[in-house]
Length: 261
Image (cartoon, rainbow, N blue to C red; front, side, top):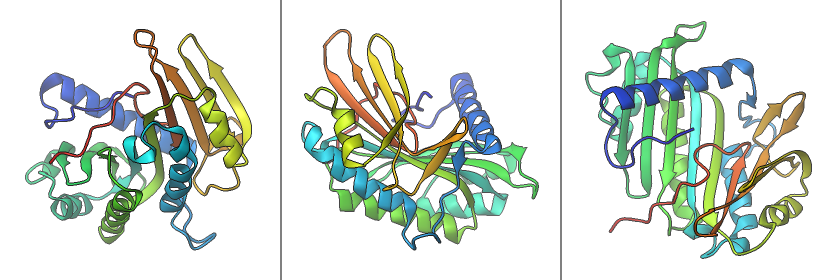
Protein backbone atom coordinates (compact mmCIF):
# COMPACT_ATOMS: atom_id res chain seq x y z
CA UNK A 1 0.00 0.00 0.00
CA UNK A 2 1.33 3.43 -0.92
CA UNK A 3 1.67 6.00 1.85
CA UNK A 4 0.12 9.45 1.57
CA UNK A 5 2.13 12.61 1.18
CA UNK A 6 4.45 13.20 4.14
CA UNK A 7 4.27 16.96 4.08
CA UNK A 8 0.78 18.11 3.15
CA UNK A 9 -2.78 16.90 3.37
CA UNK A 10 -3.65 15.03 0.18
CA UNK A 11 -5.64 17.18 -2.22
CA UNK A 12 -7.16 16.79 -5.66
CA UNK A 13 -7.74 13.65 -7.64
CA UNK A 14 -4.63 11.78 -6.50
CA UNK A 15 -5.43 12.37 -2.83
CA UNK A 16 -9.04 11.26 -3.25
CA UNK A 17 -8.06 8.10 -5.10
CA UNK A 18 -5.43 7.25 -2.47
CA UNK A 19 -7.82 7.81 0.42
CA UNK A 20 -10.53 5.69 -1.19
CA UNK A 21 -8.03 2.92 -1.93
CA UNK A 22 -6.88 2.80 1.68
CA UNK A 23 -10.42 2.75 3.01
CA UNK A 24 -11.58 0.12 0.52
CA UNK A 25 -8.67 -2.11 1.53
CA UNK A 26 -9.49 -1.47 5.18
CA UNK A 27 -13.07 -2.59 4.60
CA UNK A 28 -11.87 -5.76 2.89
CA UNK A 29 -9.50 -6.58 5.76
CA UNK A 30 -12.14 -5.88 8.39
CA UNK A 31 -14.83 -7.79 6.56
CA UNK A 32 -12.70 -10.83 5.76
CA UNK A 33 -11.47 -11.25 9.33
CA UNK A 34 -7.85 -11.65 8.23
CA UNK A 35 -6.62 -9.66 11.21
CA UNK A 36 -7.93 -10.46 14.67
CA UNK A 37 -9.05 -7.65 16.96
CA UNK A 38 -6.58 -7.03 19.81
CA UNK A 39 -7.56 -8.71 23.08
CA UNK A 40 -6.65 -6.81 26.25
CA UNK A 41 -8.32 -9.36 28.54
CA UNK A 42 -6.27 -12.49 27.87
CA UNK A 43 -3.11 -11.36 29.70
CA UNK A 44 -4.03 -7.92 31.02
CA UNK A 45 -1.30 -6.40 28.80
CA UNK A 46 -1.86 -3.96 25.98
CA UNK A 47 -1.17 -6.15 22.90
CA UNK A 48 0.19 -3.34 20.74
CA UNK A 49 2.60 -1.97 23.35
CA UNK A 50 3.65 -5.47 24.47
CA UNK A 51 4.50 -6.54 20.93
CA UNK A 52 6.30 -3.31 20.05
CA UNK A 53 8.59 -3.63 23.08
CA UNK A 54 9.53 -7.16 22.04
CA UNK A 55 10.07 -6.42 18.36
CA UNK A 56 12.18 -3.36 19.25
CA UNK A 57 14.39 -5.54 21.48
CA UNK A 58 14.77 -8.32 18.89
CA UNK A 59 15.61 -5.96 16.02
CA UNK A 60 17.90 -3.60 17.96
CA UNK A 61 21.23 -5.49 17.54
CA UNK A 62 20.55 -6.19 13.85
CA UNK A 63 19.81 -2.68 12.58
CA UNK A 64 22.41 -0.05 11.72
CA UNK A 65 22.02 2.52 14.48
CA UNK A 66 19.77 0.14 16.42
CA UNK A 67 15.99 0.17 16.56
CA UNK A 68 15.98 3.90 17.33
CA UNK A 69 17.34 4.61 13.84
CA UNK A 70 14.48 2.74 12.15
CA UNK A 71 11.14 4.15 11.13
CA UNK A 72 8.27 2.77 13.20
CA UNK A 73 4.58 3.00 12.31
CA UNK A 74 1.32 1.90 13.88
CA UNK A 75 -2.03 1.42 12.17
CA UNK A 76 -5.51 1.21 13.66
CA UNK A 77 -8.58 0.04 11.68
CA UNK A 78 -12.12 0.29 12.95
CA UNK A 79 -15.51 1.99 12.93
CA UNK A 80 -16.83 5.23 14.40
CA UNK A 81 -19.81 7.50 14.37
CA UNK A 82 -19.44 11.11 13.24
CA UNK A 83 -19.25 12.34 16.84
CA UNK A 84 -16.31 10.07 17.58
CA UNK A 85 -14.38 11.35 14.57
CA UNK A 86 -15.10 14.95 15.57
CA UNK A 87 -13.80 14.27 19.09
CA UNK A 88 -10.76 12.42 17.76
CA UNK A 89 -9.88 15.31 15.48
CA UNK A 90 -10.08 17.81 18.34
CA UNK A 91 -8.07 15.63 20.71
CA UNK A 92 -5.22 15.16 18.23
CA UNK A 93 -5.40 18.63 16.71
CA UNK A 94 -6.32 17.29 13.29
CA UNK A 95 -8.04 19.66 10.84
CA UNK A 96 -11.38 17.84 10.68
CA UNK A 97 -13.67 20.85 11.29
CA UNK A 98 -16.34 21.06 8.63
CA UNK A 99 -15.30 17.79 7.01
CA UNK A 100 -17.26 15.25 9.05
CA UNK A 101 -20.55 16.25 7.47
CA UNK A 102 -19.11 15.47 4.03
CA UNK A 103 -18.71 11.83 5.06
CA UNK A 104 -15.10 11.61 3.81
CA UNK A 105 -11.95 12.76 5.61
CA UNK A 106 -8.29 12.52 4.64
CA UNK A 107 -6.11 14.68 6.90
CA UNK A 108 -2.67 14.60 8.50
CA UNK A 109 -0.59 16.50 11.03
CA UNK A 110 3.01 16.42 12.24
CA UNK A 111 3.45 15.89 15.99
CA UNK A 112 6.70 16.10 17.96
CA UNK A 113 7.19 12.34 17.65
CA UNK A 114 5.95 11.83 14.09
CA UNK A 115 3.05 12.11 11.67
CA UNK A 116 -0.55 11.11 12.36
CA UNK A 117 -2.91 10.48 9.43
CA UNK A 118 -6.64 9.90 9.56
CA UNK A 119 -9.00 8.56 6.92
CA UNK A 120 -12.74 8.27 7.47
CA UNK A 121 -15.63 7.47 5.14
CA UNK A 122 -19.34 7.11 5.68
CA UNK A 123 -19.58 5.19 2.41
CA UNK A 124 -18.59 1.92 4.13
CA UNK A 125 -20.52 1.37 7.36
CA UNK A 126 -20.99 -1.43 9.88
CA UNK A 127 -24.34 -2.78 11.08
CA UNK A 128 -24.66 0.03 13.62
CA UNK A 129 -24.23 2.64 10.91
CA UNK A 130 -20.71 3.68 11.92
CA UNK A 131 -18.25 4.75 9.23
CA UNK A 132 -14.87 3.18 8.46
CA UNK A 133 -11.76 4.58 10.17
CA UNK A 134 -8.07 4.14 9.40
CA UNK A 135 -5.50 5.97 11.52
CA UNK A 136 -1.74 5.68 11.01
CA UNK A 137 1.04 7.04 13.19
CA UNK A 138 4.49 7.20 11.58
CA UNK A 139 7.16 7.96 14.16
CA UNK A 140 10.25 9.97 13.37
CA UNK A 141 13.52 8.05 13.50
CA UNK A 142 16.19 8.72 16.14
CA UNK A 143 13.98 8.69 19.21
CA UNK A 144 13.71 6.31 22.14
CA UNK A 145 11.41 3.35 22.49
CA UNK A 146 9.75 4.95 25.50
CA UNK A 147 9.03 8.16 23.58
CA UNK A 148 7.25 6.21 20.85
CA UNK A 149 5.44 3.95 23.30
CA UNK A 150 4.22 6.96 25.27
CA UNK A 151 2.79 8.60 22.14
CA UNK A 152 1.14 5.35 20.98
CA UNK A 153 -0.35 4.75 24.43
CA UNK A 154 -1.82 8.27 24.45
CA UNK A 155 -3.33 7.74 21.00
CA UNK A 156 -4.90 4.46 22.14
CA UNK A 157 -6.40 6.29 25.12
CA UNK A 158 -7.91 8.92 22.83
CA UNK A 159 -9.45 6.24 20.60
CA UNK A 160 -11.05 4.62 23.66
CA UNK A 161 -12.26 7.95 25.05
CA UNK A 162 -14.05 8.70 21.76
CA UNK A 163 -15.70 5.23 21.72
CA UNK A 164 -14.07 4.33 18.42
CA UNK A 165 -14.28 0.57 17.85
CA UNK A 166 -10.86 -0.80 16.87
CA UNK A 167 -11.19 -4.05 14.93
CA UNK A 168 -7.49 -4.47 14.13
CA UNK A 169 -4.16 -2.85 14.91
CA UNK A 170 -0.66 -3.47 13.59
CA UNK A 171 2.89 -2.11 13.78
CA UNK A 172 5.85 -2.07 11.41
CA UNK A 173 9.46 -0.96 11.28
CA UNK A 174 11.87 -0.22 8.41
CA UNK A 175 15.61 0.00 8.87
CA UNK A 176 18.97 -0.82 7.32
CA UNK A 177 21.04 -3.90 8.16
CA UNK A 178 24.41 -5.27 7.13
CA UNK A 179 23.56 -8.74 8.41
CA UNK A 180 22.50 -11.50 6.03
CA UNK A 181 19.35 -13.39 7.02
CA UNK A 182 18.65 -10.86 9.76
CA UNK A 183 14.97 -11.74 9.64
CA UNK A 184 15.76 -15.29 10.70
CA UNK A 185 17.66 -13.99 13.72
CA UNK A 186 14.53 -12.14 14.84
CA UNK A 187 12.40 -15.21 14.21
CA UNK A 188 14.77 -17.30 16.34
CA UNK A 189 14.58 -14.82 19.22
CA UNK A 190 10.79 -14.91 18.96
CA UNK A 191 10.72 -18.72 18.97
CA UNK A 192 8.63 -18.37 15.81
CA UNK A 193 7.40 -21.07 13.44
CA UNK A 194 7.71 -20.35 9.70
CA UNK A 195 4.29 -20.40 8.01
CA UNK A 196 4.85 -18.83 4.58
CA UNK A 197 7.78 -17.70 2.45
CA UNK A 198 7.93 -15.47 -0.64
CA UNK A 199 10.98 -14.56 -2.70
CA UNK A 200 11.60 -12.53 -5.84
CA UNK A 201 14.73 -10.97 -7.26
CA UNK A 202 15.14 -8.30 -4.57
CA UNK A 203 12.89 -9.26 -1.67
CA UNK A 204 12.58 -12.21 0.68
CA UNK A 205 9.48 -12.17 2.88
CA UNK A 206 8.72 -14.72 5.59
CA UNK A 207 5.62 -14.97 7.76
CA UNK A 208 5.68 -16.65 11.14
CA UNK A 209 3.66 -17.46 14.23
CA UNK A 210 5.15 -16.75 17.67
CA UNK A 211 3.61 -17.48 21.06
CA UNK A 212 5.50 -14.45 22.39
CA UNK A 213 3.22 -12.02 20.55
CA UNK A 214 -0.35 -10.99 21.31
CA UNK A 215 -1.56 -9.46 18.02
CA UNK A 216 -2.72 -12.01 15.45
CA UNK A 217 -3.93 -12.39 11.89
CA UNK A 218 -5.18 -15.31 9.81
CA UNK A 219 -3.60 -16.43 6.55
CA UNK A 220 -5.64 -19.17 4.92
CA UNK A 221 -6.48 -21.40 7.89
CA UNK A 222 -3.42 -20.60 10.00
CA UNK A 223 -2.79 -17.87 12.51
CA UNK A 224 0.23 -15.63 11.86
CA UNK A 225 1.61 -12.71 13.82
CA UNK A 226 5.09 -11.83 12.58
CA UNK A 227 6.17 -10.91 9.06
CA UNK A 228 9.82 -10.18 8.30
CA UNK A 229 11.41 -9.17 5.02
CA UNK A 230 14.78 -8.25 3.57
CA UNK A 231 14.77 -5.97 0.53
CA UNK A 232 17.93 -5.26 -1.45
CA UNK A 233 18.02 -2.06 -3.45
CA UNK A 234 19.03 -3.13 -6.97
CA UNK A 235 20.86 0.16 -7.60
CA UNK A 236 22.76 0.71 -4.34
CA UNK A 237 22.92 -2.79 -2.90
CA UNK A 238 21.62 -1.48 0.45
CA UNK A 239 19.92 -4.18 2.47
CA UNK A 240 16.78 -3.09 4.27
CA UNK A 241 15.17 -5.04 7.09
CA UNK A 242 11.41 -4.66 7.47
CA UNK A 243 9.21 -6.21 10.14
CA UNK A 244 5.54 -6.14 11.01
CA UNK A 245 3.17 -7.49 13.64
CA UNK A 246 0.96 -9.21 12.74
CA UNK A 247 1.81 -8.23 9.14
CA UNK A 248 3.87 -5.54 7.40
CA UNK A 249 1.87 -2.55 6.18
CA UNK A 250 3.20 0.08 3.81
CA UNK A 251 5.96 0.35 1.26
CA UNK A 252 9.04 -1.88 1.81
CA UNK A 253 11.38 0.75 0.40
CA UNK A 254 10.14 3.79 2.33
CA UNK A 255 12.83 5.65 4.25
CA UNK A 256 12.22 6.73 7.88
CA UNK A 257 12.11 10.47 8.57
CA UNK A 258 14.40 11.92 11.24
CA UNK A 259 13.19 14.01 14.15
CA UNK A 260 12.77 17.63 13.06
CA UNK A 261 14.37 20.23 15.29
